[in-house]
Length: 254
Image 1 (tube, rainbow, N blue to C red):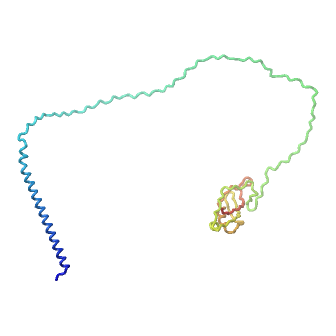
Image 2 (image 1 turned 180 degrees about the vertical axis):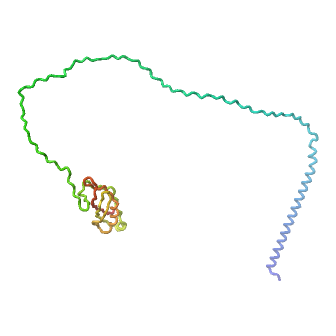
Image 3 (image 1 turned 135 degrees about the vertical axis):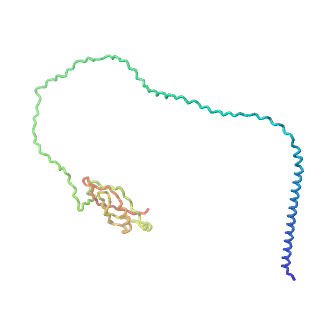
């Protein structure tokens, strides 16, 4: 007994074959119709050709006679060269001279002044004028001040203090110290008293901490800042000298 699957497959195969046969039949019909139409079109064209040829006239009208044409080549005429023109002469800048003024005779005026007497006569002096008795006073030599001013004694080591200067120290550049981050976060405030030497060149050397509160918090920032300071050095007798100086720096939070 055949299974249903085999029957279905056989049916599908048979259906496909029928469709292919139908398509082949249609294709053959289309080819046959195309060939037939081409034959009909060619036959109709061949039938109309004799009629078209019969309408063309057998005798053509005679053409008009051709007249000969003579071609003459003319040479171009060169224009005459332009005549050379002489350059114009430059104009001379003539400045008119001013006309001479006529001489005018001016009348001369001579004043007549009376002769002056240059030796005036003074009245005679009276004979009874009083006479003054002059006394000679001996002059003692005055004590002259010492020409050389008293010099400030040179301190030991050659370094002066601010009180011994004739000309004071003048700060040219004082960079403030940087507030330490740890102290800023902990809200620590204080001050540092520092001692340093200002050289005759205006630089700062030998910086040391004299006193600090609180100790060890701001010392490093102060030493770094004071070392970069610059001064106009103090003078003694008009000459720059090395000078010891002190300063107190405060650290406060706003």
